Length: 216
Image (cartoon, rainbow, N blue to C red):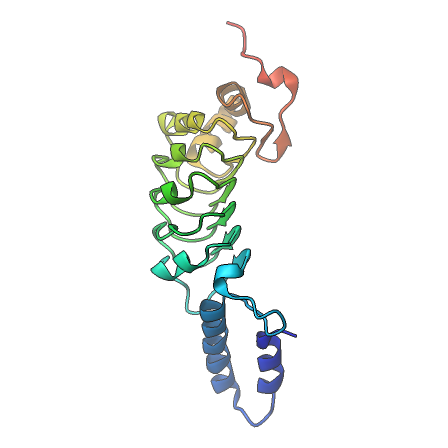
């Protein structure tokens, strides 16, 4: 049983008033996650040894990616979704990171990804406020990009995804550009020839006929 589970069972005692219980439980939960990074009593796992770290739905929300992330040297999947993060930062030291989950934050650009350019395979960054794709090209090994419900509206910005030679899966629904071209009936016809390595677009597999350039 985890530290969190044991604490919540003990804290359910009627000797604590509910408002105090909620505040104290939230504080304890954040403290354990931030200091131990989901380490368990049973394994004694340290932050530097954890392969997967989840800091989701924090109360109060995490508002920045601070330097403590650099201790996660063995981390392969880092989940910071559903917080209040505005900037990607302090990924130096995560030399084994393969999956970065930053969905449902307030991120406005893709600066800061160069620190994990050599290892990152999947970027989950839907439901943010990203309009420009500058910085995405450094991810030469990226295979999966979940970027739905952002603010990309210009085709010139979208073309920067050509700099991802290994991209196999793209989720882009809910961006102004996608909505416009889908309404015109040209979204898949334009995207699939542009991104030659793509195998799935918006959850729908790419078929061979779609991969071919349309004839004039």
